[in-house]
Length: 246
Image 1 (tube, rainbow, N blue to C red):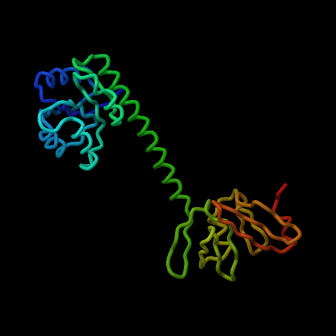
Image 2 (tube, one colour; image 1 turned 30 degrees about the vertical axis):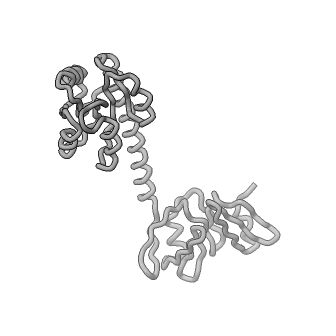
Image 3 (spheres, rainbow, N blue to C red; image 1 turned 90 degrees about the vertical axis):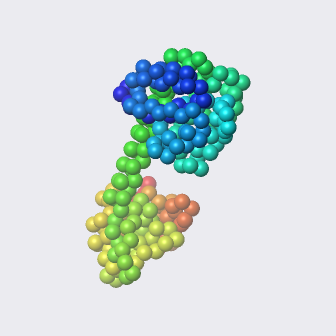
């Protein structure tokens, strides 16, 4: 489990800082460990770097650990907090404050290592989720079609399209309540759309099959709906057969 982390130890007792730093180094997970013996000194350190973990004492002269903890979001510090204290009565309060973990002094090697491994696993999971989200976002951007209009260019995700309707040499693209008038004809629009999922109905329409909820053969009407937004279109009766609905 190769992972290099950074940490800040905040404690008013120098002996505690020295011991905790030694234990952290033993894990071989850290490339940088900084120390502060007060909240004010911790802020100075945080102005220079943003550690993965902050090992924080609770009872200190001046501002205590909880006050420091609550101020971090306002300073754009997103480090995870591990409270390190000799007072076990603060455990429930630490959990309620959504601290990452809680360690009692003197710090136990195994408990410390378990805490760090837990953090690494969560960090890896978050990184994996972030990579998937970015890949999905990129895929959506790449899959959008370019639509030239009279006023400029818009990029539309095909999955948002209910239907496209020929309007002479132009095309009306319906994405629900919004209608986009493209300077491209229906054939050129069809070339940009995915091969699967869209149905060409005669010369006038391209319909997103996914959003068809009803076909009225008597009235030659098709009802489409996406996210609560619906549209009803009327097609020539002879093209009803183009809609392959069982």
